[in-house]
Amino acid sequence: MARLNAHELLDIVVDDGSFVSWDTAPILPAGGVSEDYAAELAAAREKSGVDESIITGEGMIEGRRVAIVAGEFRFLAGSIGVAAAQRLVDAIERATLEGLPLLAGPASGGTRMQEGTIAFLSMVKITNAVVAHRRAGLPYLVYLRHPTTGGVFASWGSMGHVTVAEPGSLIGFLGPRVFEAIYAEKFPENVQTGENLHKHGIIDAVIGPERIPATVARVLDVLMGAKEVPPRVADPDTRPEIVDPNSGAWEAITRSRNPDRPGVRDLLRTAANTVLPLNGTGEGEKDPGLLLALAKFGSAPCIVLGQDRFRQDSRAPLGPAALREARRGMRLAAELDLPLVTVIDTPGAALSKSAEEGGIAGEIARSLADLANLDAPSVSLILGEGSGGGALALIPADRVLSAENGWLSPLPPEGASAIVHRTTDRAPEMAQSQGVHAPMLKATGVVDRIIAEHPDASEEPLDFVSRVGATLEYELIELMREPSARRLARRMERYRTLGI
Figure 1 (cartoon, rainbow, N blue to C red):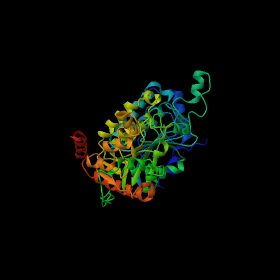
Figure 2: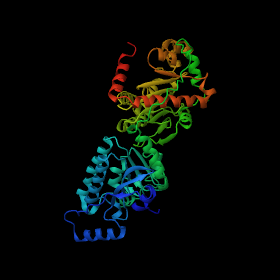
Figure 3: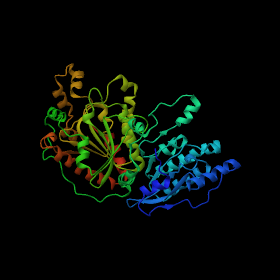
Figure 4: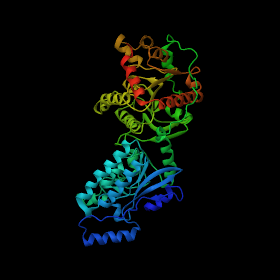
């Protein structure tokens, strides 16, 4: 496939005339350069028109200042030697010092073989620079270009908060030519492609370079949102007029299971003005039962972890991969101090051999711990069914909201009835006695606020999700304006004293 060189990529990505190079210091050659290698470097400079395999600088992307590092494949296949690595580290550290988000566009065959082990170990300091940038709460975005392999993919190419790839790109750890030379057989086809990595939940999307500016601008509009706290909005007061703890729990449960009831995708489609889906754990897993996205409700930015009611059934229940995907979202929120919204709508986590062997119980525990101790603002929304460990894993938050017909229970009422009465026939009675429905959850302090349904969200889906969106905007902005230490202390106290 045709390759864009680094400057052609910049011409597409940055606003016209806005790029400023940071590559003003002369390149210092690696020590002990042989005559043959010196000739290779000179030929590479002549062929590529650049002085090394990395170019760095800053530019405006749809009016926002962004630091940029990009690989130039025409310079010795974009390989990273000591000088290129130092240029890369200098740029990352400058971006961190100046508080700039960073866009990386690697295109490389990996470590420069002419410089051997010292060049190989340069990946350590590059990785450390990226880690420091992320720890500073600054977004790191990666656009994997054709090809990106070897140590580059195994370091700064795989560390993005959000990672996308060029269509048809070769992306992999060990290049196919090297694999064939070492193992005397061809590498399987269509494995080391951006499209296959997306399929397996390793990267977030595959998009052409012409889409990068708009995508970067929208992503940064959300990710930089915590540093640009929006002004307060009026409380939409979407609460029901009457909250009766003695109302029928079973009626609420029945309504929550209506197939016409709106789910998290309806909420985002109608009530959010920005939605950027993320994909999988970034570590080779994805679960259709969980939606992970960057979003904005009104002026409030957030990460959304939503259980998708329409993609969970007996054949595809919520499994451990969904919770690992959720924990990726929690890590993003923690690093970027970005508000997190969890949307609970599940008949329960998977009960199966594969779920047990995949560590479902441990993932529930780790998700619960990560969320309960999250420094960033958090809101949990019980949108419908809230059954078992799958719901528990996403519940602890600064503010807990519930739809009027939402509910939360250790097991589906049928399961609770089977345990206590050895029959499922008394499920309605069990639901009422356990106090699983929203009015009772509010009376006991589990839920802070109930969002009205008139009388059932399935009968007014657009109006209902609009009310939910307005409530989320209000609650998120209020939390963003509060000191994190105070929020966290209140959250800890809430769950310490619940039920006492």
